[in-house]
Length: 298
Image 1 (cartoon, rainbow, N blue to C red):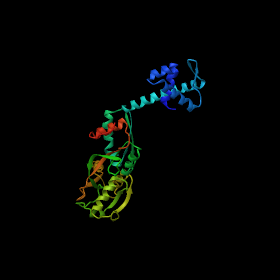
Image 2: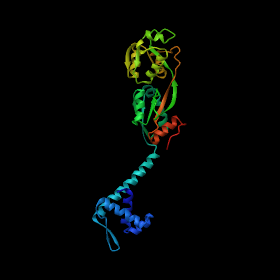
Image 3: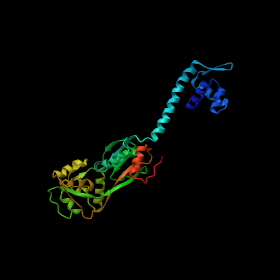
Image 4: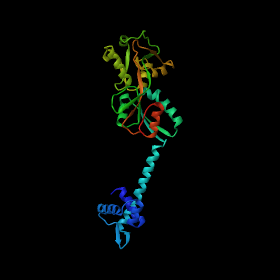
């Protein structure tokens, strides 16, 4: 039994005739009869009594007509809802963000977008860059903003902006200048966790100079960027962090910033989406606003 059969069935009922229903549906009478017979076979009950020239419903046919009308109406409502949602500017965008974009980049992006599309709401999940990539890959969120690329054919990365990493130290901490790679061993060090984009870039930098993480005097590891900054402010040690994040605290005279000699590597923050995930219109518009060159499937 399918909706098309039910549609033919309701037409026979409403026209009180197989031939008139066939004419209305632009089908042959034999085709209409075949569909009704299939329904009766599927249900194991007769739907019509054929008495002379009259076609009347059996009690089973009456019950089926009651439900068929409801099902066909529900189908029409479902199709209408899907068509309207495809062009609706209302809805929710689910975004996963790593710590630096979540604090310093994404709020401004959402403000700019919300100014144009005030009916759209946001759900924001924060975690390490690797977790952000995993959430986008699994379809748990629509979009991600993170500071490291994780190769996967399903993920498409759009560069948003670039920055360098810098050394930060407590306000009254004595730091010799210039800061070199070797001099990093001299200071108590606070390290980000293994899944952050900052940590991934720092590991690449250390490998470049054949330097192991174990050679650093690591006092603490932190999952939280805010905790890491607070540890630095309290004088526990130094750390290497996003320059964007560091500038915010330095402007408040809470820490000092130093560039590391020969550390000219830059990293990008990316907007990422899953190419295999069907995005609703609000998420597509968000992508278009911040990457107008993107070609998205309708």
